Length: 505
Image 1 (cartoon, rainbow, N blue to C red):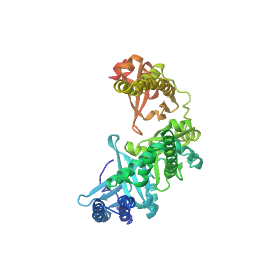
Image 2: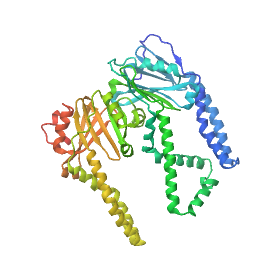
Image 3: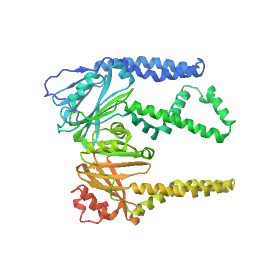
């Protein structure tokens, strides 16, 4: 992104952020005051000196931040000229930033519950900078109607290619059944428990001393473990399922995916925190059909966009999601509509059997053998029973590992379909990637002494979008160069007369 002051543009009125910005700045008080209230509830209203000191620090911080927020609001101005979005900010050090309108790649509107209560939203305009970097300009609080008008104004320079059906997908309440088939059914419970523990520990409350928690563990210790442990796992699963459904509803309520103006892909979603992301069609480089193991077993999938200008990896994960966990048929339909041609990922080129052997051997070496060796050593030092356990683990884990390796090998595939390069891999987390062939900027050939002996090579396509590097793992080495040249003609011209080893160097 270029940063300059456009002195040749005609005079355009400057605008301030919404005055409700000051109220938003006070929203941070919710977490510490909530922690103090929780501490008071857990201790019966008896706050120690540490809690009172925390309260005084909160009050002093509130005064300082409020004063700074008022000055920042008075010093912040923005305007849209004929060719740029300009922003003036700063208290002691003044900052003047300008983004050319033709380089804006997406406009993101985000409103958390406090923003929605106050009727404001946050606008972020993302743009690809020089050298492929990403920069962003953020207007923290705008009235919702003003933010909508500004987004339309910023995206007015987009292409106007036609689209037959602007609406690609909308929310369906039946999709909630896929929510428990995600990581959050278990991970969410432990994440919430860990967060609560850190909050209580930070304010001086020991969770293990809270009455109902202490009694629960005492009862667990005096009960039959063969009964209480399965019941505890069922309780965690039930809580995780409820939390997963609630999180799904929060993230994807009123979901709508559409071509907003025939040139911009728009995603609107959210219950308490609403989000509206716009991706310029010209920056769309492909799609990712994502099928985690549990979701795949339930016949579901998600879709992500491969697009430039969505920010760093963390920002890209948040903004690239264009379809929640949904039926696989719906995910394929969305992929086809975004690509402009069928995904056709069912008949890809299979990878050599040596790739299966590599997956099985690596899984045995890195997952099974460490556990077996640990049990063997402990058995030799402590009790022979552990030696039998080591043998049992080896006998039970080997066929399971082989089955997973076979599934991972069957998932491997690559091919060329029309204007797109297709790549598929993964067993626990299976991805099918479709990339625009003209977007491939470079190729990387990677091997190891073991893969060279097996006649395999990993081919990586570099794209200035999404995750940036997309790997075709363990393909036949003899086919790699020809396939790369066929997928992106001209990118390997100078290497075609050299052997593969020379090309890798």
